[in-house]
Amino acid sequence: MTATLETVNMPGVSPRGPGASKAPVRRGLGRPLGYAAAVVIIVAMLAPVAFIIIGGFRSNSEITTDPAGFPTVWNIGNYIDVLTGGVFWRQVLNSTIAGALTTLGVVVMGLMASYVLARYNFRGRGALYATFAAGLMFPMTVAITPLYILIKNLGLMNSLGGIILPQIAFALPTTIIILVPFLRAIPDEIQEAAFIDGCSRLGFFWRMVVPLAMPGVITVGILAFIASWNSYLLPLFILNNQDMFTLPLGVQAFSSQYSVDTARVLAFTSLSMIPALLFFAFFERRIVGGLTGAVKG
Image (tube, rainbow, N blue to C red; front, side, top):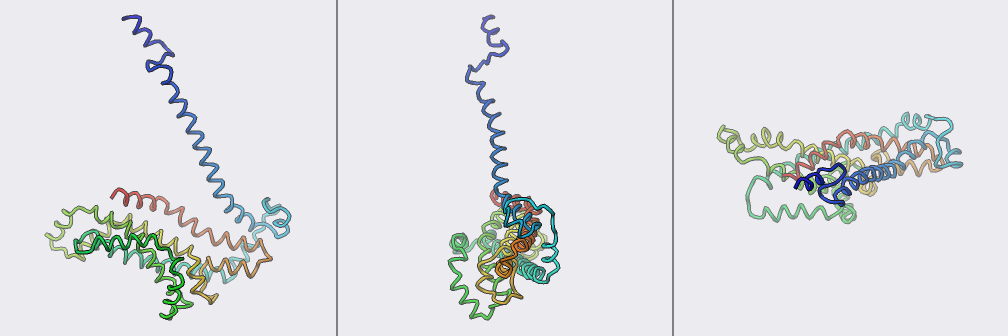
């Protein structure tokens, strides 16, 4: 019995057999490999963005001679020309107005519709929710032709309203799918206590529902704003007046107008990307937190 215990407790001898020592080794090798794969993916994703930003500091001759090289002299003239021109800031203003109004409409209408679907029992509620869920499989690309005819008949061509209203409509399915779990997770006891204290249904909605669902509201607002900011196909069909161009459409028009000046086009493109990148990076945790809460709900 003593010899058996000494054998088990001997240093360097695993009580679980020779195969037990392989698991830590595998875990130790797996972590560096995972980090290496993550670094490769990140570099592959950021390399085109870095190429565009750095290309704006180069001259056209340098880009022609060595497209992937670094500038010999960092020239900020291309960026200054874009920033001092009125075209860029007018398109930024148009994109900001379209994004802000789209976000406002998506949040207000989506929150009210989600509140009804989550807190009220009525006939056809499941079918209505399934209809919104089916909207996720109906992209704007499929409906662009009838959508163009509808907007033209409404007299909204060459206006930001012709962009804002369809963007709200196509963003509502995602908004409702995210917000309904938040609103369903609110305990019924809170609602009953609010009604006992004399709170009306609208008062309960504004005082209790909206603050409790704020993580989901922020998430859908950010997603709606970014989708509106990056929208290209809808403005391409609706807007013909350059004074009403949004930033993605303005990049295409600027590239066609200054196709020979490659460095200036890269500067304009990089400046167009920076607001969306900064906005997404700043609110990344809000998006992840809101989507996590929706899954838990």
